Length: 228
Ligand SMILES: C[S@@+](CC[C@H](N)C(=O)[O-])C[C@H]1O[C@@H](n2cnc3c(N)ncnc32)[C@H](O)[C@@H]1O
Image (cartoon, rainbow, N blue to C red; front, side, top):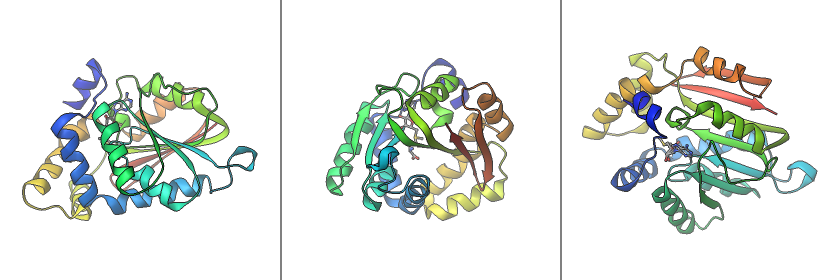
């Protein structure tokens, strides 16, 4: 389904679905998001932005914004989160206010980002690349907005996963009842069908402007490292 939807348009998340996604993320995925924030902090340490200043970090498609929020707690970064969903931008702002951290959340499309070229020391994108209508355009824009020497990390579901790996992932989320059933169903059907294989992602990268990248399979995910 995801694969067919994204052929028509970007798969945005809005309305009650965005509210449910926020609640599920806040209640069940905070450890995952904190882990991602630590991975970003390994790419660029506070105070190690180009020119020795505060690093500028972009989170593409943050959904409810918890990775950016966790990163803001880790150090002195200038963080921007950009999502196509106006509803998620509002949710992100409320979440950042509640947690008393400063992140600029803005609305925008990854394949036409509202930023000058060479603006960011690093960028991050999780669980969203498979939603993009124009994946080549997304990579083109990621290249454009990164500073020379900048790095990107895209994490998204690997199409080649086993039932056991997917069950393990849902177990980590500690969801129960209908939510557990739904997550297993989603991972096994429409999310998986829309996901890229390692080889599929490598083919996209081979025709992008990035000449240096690495795709690793880790658990249920692909970790795609981009170097400009
Ligand atoms: C499944 S959510 C992932 C949210 C969050 N990154 C996470 O790890 O849970 C996918 C996100 O991609 C956003 N999105 C889809 N197409 C987009 C685009 N072209 N540009 C920016 N955001 C987009 C959706 O609105 C949604 O917030």
